[in-house]
Image (cartoon, rainbow, N blue to C red):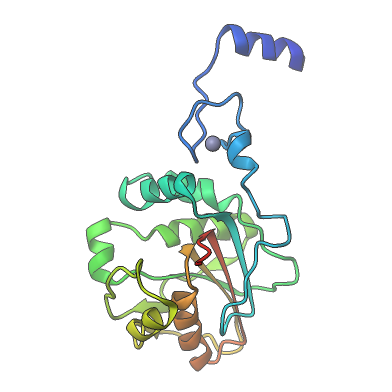
Length: 216
Ligand SMILES: [Zn+2]
């Protein structure tokens, strides 16, 4: 058996290339591949990582959206770094009193899915489902209108643009749903999803995202 001090000396003599998957910088033995600096930005357990979103019974975000987390999300979405879905999912904390039947990723329109090859929210949802042993259903909620990028729009403009964007296919009556997405900005997308799920008689809708962008 090697003791920790000796291992540390070995690590210093023969450094391994540890890299933080969030900020892409070299780090000394990051835990769960997250360096100390990025870990200090993790709000998953701090109690204020929540905001009120219309139609959503509970919402948790994990990291604030800043230049560092944005870089990671960008690599996940456009850089084909699918492993980041599992990496990010491990930091999502779900309150114990959320009794969840199905995890549902916020869907992409099929045109966008074809272009990108995968839905980053689904990668996160799959990893979370595996960890929590909850069924992931990516077949229930469909995006039927390909809405334009929403970055510069206000909440009201977004809600307007999202009218009719989602459809429910499948039975979710009485079910408790957890919606998963990579980023929440105004919450308009989550609300639009929730409205459809409620129409289909879901009992409770929770949501969790990796990042949250507070709007001024
Ligand atoms: Zn880092």
